[in-house]
Amino acid sequence: MTTMSIPVALSTDLLTGTEWNAARVQELLQLSADVKARPDHYASALAGRFLALILEKPSLRTRVTFEVGMRGLGGTAIFLDHTVSRLGERESIPDVARNLSRWVQAIVARVFAQRELDQLAEFASVPVINALSDRFHPCQAYADFFTLRERYGTLRGLKLAYVGDGNNVCHSLMAVAARVGAEMRIATPAGYEPDASVVAEARQAGRETRATLEMFASPEEAVAGVRAVYTDVWASMGQEDEAATRAKIFASYQVNDALMKRAAPDALFMHCLPAHRGAEVTDSVMDSPRSIVFDQAENRLHVQKAILLMLLS
Ligand code: CP
Ligand code: NVA
Image (cartoon, rainbow, N blue to C red):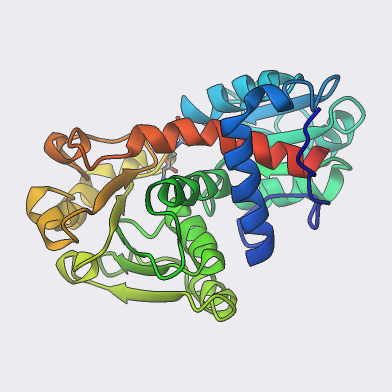
């Protein structure tokens, strides 16, 4: 077992990234660092525990990191493939939640609609973790700020820009940025801004940490002098029908060498992946020494192990 004490859970679910306050996020980042540095100390921390991994959409990173992570903690993940049938079709979501709660100690779910997750959480008696919904991707955002912390040491006052669609990834980044005291700048085309209620929540939460959150229409203005530039796909899973329209609307939001030149000289490039090379990001930026996209992907593993420890220990 570990020699590091694992904090007591405040919220039993992780559905958005707004549940945990600034102190709790710092605990998560600390524990993630320890899990990464000393994986053997946690090798049997969740021995005999089971995790149900429900995915309604394709995944590379999320599936592998939760499966490898659970195994690395001594537990077992059970993959429930809902990529071909919707959750709730064969059996209602409340009944799925009530069944799973009798057999497993946590449910991780990637769903189309946030309300499906909320329903799982309402009827499950075990923690429910959002593995991406239409609204949020908290595990990604925690891994991303952990990656920035590894690079820069401190997150307070760190300037980063998110360029592109005000989507699920953007929402959880805003929520976590507010809790770590980062200065976040967002550039989206008109009509693709992040949800106003998520912006308002982040601004409110950021008062404690002196985080700032600014909206821009111009990507050039948003990235001016920042230490990290983040982007995501222009059409998320479930928005395939809009891909061609969005490609035109987002064309001037591409992260390319010219845009990166406007950021700080040492600015990092970030992407949750999968990336559409040649669309939201060029090969030259993705493959440059400033790109930390595979560090982000690796850190999903360590941070999610820490999340599981915090919710299940
Ligand atoms: N970033 C991320 O969640 O990747 P997957 O869709 O491959 O899980
Ligand atoms: N915004 C993307 C993120 C994928 C990890 C999507 O929802 O498809």
